Length: 240
Image 1 (cartoon, rainbow, N blue to C red):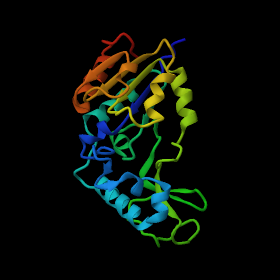
Image 2: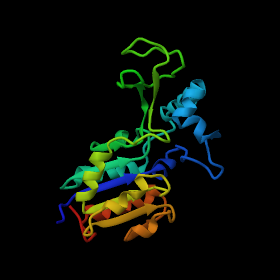
Image 3: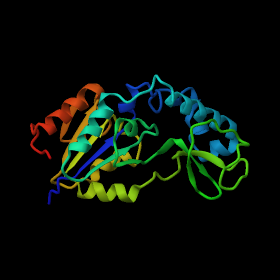
């Protein structure tokens, strides 16, 4: 039965307009690096200095004054605050733009750029500075135990159990700025109940567009605020 529950999934497309580069380009590179070199456990074992340097640069970029939440981030935060029901925002992005826009009930399934994890204790810490191979961990006081709190290839995304529970009982699923080629997120739409409304908001068609009943194409910073405004005004067939 419908429960007035909404799950929103966001991908790289929502942050691209804030100056955050998308995950990969057509040559299989991530900011001029081979993906397997900077986004895999084996790459980290081979060259921790390279991996740390890569994420240090991304961490610094995220904290620059040029990178700020855009209208799409802000609209989703407003939707959460106005929605009279269960609301969960799941993001594939590792930036903190949703939090800075005001989102509260948020899960980072691929980790967070401004956090690090100790490989010995598995403790997670907030972190804004650079990391080097010999940086000492604050929990074990040993060098070389810190790694970015990022889900790499061959690793399991965070909070999947909670996400699947929310998906299987929601009656509105919205995907914003997703490419449809990164799993398991690309398969989330297949777990939505039969009664649920499914909406894709994207710059253009994705690999999973055929799985959605409704499509809104255009820049997230323009389309998401319009979509949210319709919901708030009750212009959609389902609203809070």
